[in-house]
Length: 310
Image: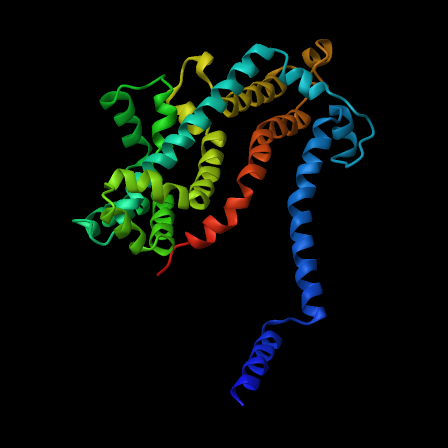
């Protein structure tokens, strides 16, 4: 009787967990539409960036333009050394910032995951408090320029994003739900210290959450331009995103302020505007798109296991 009941129960569970063909079709259709909603705009951006400005003005955005052109990229890379330097600065800031970001937040999150940490609730309260309340832009500017005296240095671009409380909470939750306390106790019995436990046991088991946080940190550093606006005056230290914003603003200023007769005389009517915007987006998103496949296999696991619980 019991042996027959077990397979019957298993089959019943299997039937309850399965979905019908209609539901499966709708789920697949939903994800296909969502994927298209993400992919189609990127394709349109790339295509428009290779369209002539006159074609965009006359016909609008098209997936197959009337006239192809690399005018926007020629204008953007007219001073190629400046763009390449800004690219290198952004890449170095992103790589160094991401590594420091993950390392520092892991060193804060791991002790918080240990229930035997003295004043654990105090450190957690401080973390949540600074996540909910900010000192504001003026206070940050005064601290960075007057107290730390790092204006017009690369440290002014690294420090603001070096500690992000939400990702510390994600890491802490991952450590609590994934790393069993028995593993740590066994390592202590074998004579391992806290730093050795973290380096040899915790870190290798935490690659999913590290990769997840690293991806978000990479996007934060790569897209950051506001801190460059606040703290960087030397044009040779500008990151790529802020350099492109300056180029776009200069083009808009020229088009808006110059006399129409001068625009015709200097042949500036076809100066890239909309196509330049798209070219800058295409250039800016390239490294992030190429980096994502290397982190994708860790991404879902780290985000779901490290999600915040009540």
